Amino acid sequence: MAVPRDALRIARDSLKQFERAGHGGTRNVAHFCPGCGNRIYHENPEQPDILRLKTGTLDSQDVVQPLMHIWASRKPAWLQLPEGGLVFETQETPAEMFAALQAHLAEQCA
Image (cartoon, rainbow, N blue to C red; front, side, top):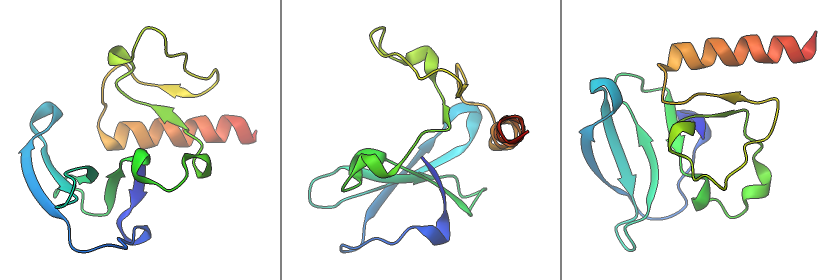
């Protein structure tokens, strides 16, 4: 789930991190719990205002409603994506995804 950096507050001790190459050569920094090893969020240092939060780390997943799905080409065959949402087979650039999201929301509001 993409969230603005300043919208995320970590309630526990400091997280640890590691860096790896992301899709298309981007940088991917993973922030994880030093106690259990679960990844909490990822970031691309070249896009410092956006974090990708792992929704499984939330106290309740009922507070989020997905607007788009990425990497649909890797979803399990049994998983049915809701109709009417944005679906990307792989991961587009953030600019492409947010442009598609803006167009999608504008269509829904029209």
